[in-house]
Image (spheres, rainbow, N blue to C red):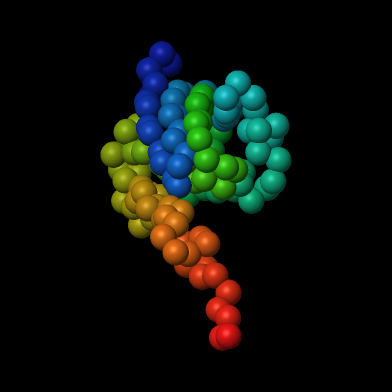
Length: 132
């Protein structure tokens, strides 16, 4: 296991959100931007996304996490936090890498918003066509 005073840092990214995760041995308390996870993410789907790396590796309740997240919306932030937790868990024990990798938790999801093109209203939406 991990010593009491050591912690592991993982940086996760998703869309425009960036999360810095500090994992330390503890009893499973997760604090995001100074608030508990239940208060910060009220929807169960986001909480499941965040806790997925710990569920997959059977480390629920073994680590406390202090998380700072910047940018993006709720979905991007939850994905960034999950990515950061997965990276930090990998640093705690190298044996967890195979499990995390096989579940796709170490791969950065590079899908971002497509840029607006000139002559179009949005990325792909064209102005309405008029025949005459």
